[in-house]
Length: 246
Ligand code: BTN
Image (cartoon, rainbow, N blue to C red):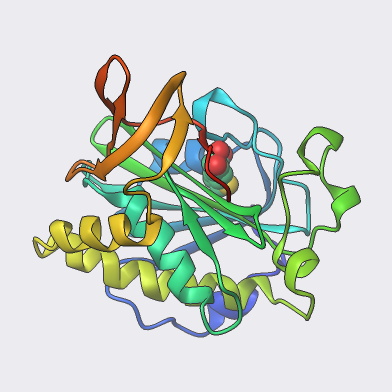
């Protein structure tokens, strides 16, 4: 399961969080940290892998999880807390803010210089939640499959410099812990407000799931409310295209 991994420093020195990362389990290789978390649970336990052989993305896609290049991890949580994907995107943005200016893109991507560097997948099963986060860290353009090269980037390819995956994970877990404590303390509305503000979508002309129109708001469930020629649509997930520039 876990010999020497890139994350050993986290196993040795505690990160000082309340829930998230109270236990960290590191794998060299696993099918998917989300699958493992759904199976094994543990409220706040973090499963991190150097490589995933069957990493999953949103909308039934595969998540490219090559060894040594990225940070692939899942936080297992009890129950089915609401608002997690928004809280997680904000937490990653804030954790990396000292070194990277990341933009959030509805429904829960993070972009760096216009390239997707982080994706989030929340899944529920049998009273458990898996909050899975993939952050591209060391990839060069040629490390991505050809079909992803135009859209995907990594912290290193977009910003240069040296990045330590364990330190990125430590920073993200601290921010996530704050957000999850906030949600558990009844602060979901605050997360939704911050999320809607960060997306900056109101009034923008977009297309998503075949619906084209102006965004009226992101509502309190995180849905995109779009005014289209055939009426108002609330969209919960999909691939968003901006039709009025980036
Ligand atoms: C997306 O499609 O944008 C979501 C990608 C989520 C990838 C992460 S990597 C860790 C965790 N395990 C998985 O199988 N998927 C998530």
